[in-house]
Image 1 (cartoon, rainbow, N blue to C red):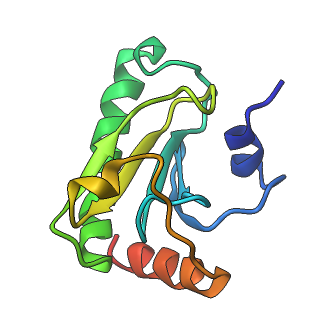
Image 2: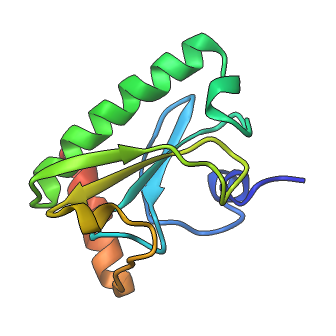
Image 3: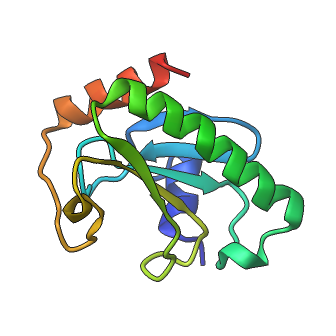
Length: 129
């Protein structure tokens, strides 16, 4: 059965897409910890981070860095935090979260954004790539 991320990548489920290349799909988290919370997801559906082939793992980290730099330019923050948890969706993904304080990194704290805000943020990040 396909993960929710595979369905987002295929366009079956809509998303606030930021970027994609042959290997990765980048979009805003629909239930964000902070404004600009972004997910970087391999197009290849793999359950666990350390089950990725070495080349794909290294590429994921490199591409996540590129996205984080664009994110930090688009969303004012002290820094961009990165987490790989992987319990909620069985498909490898990197969380990139703009941080003002440690509380922004707690996955039980969520912010509410309107669709227009998601669209504007996705465009701003994309523009910095």
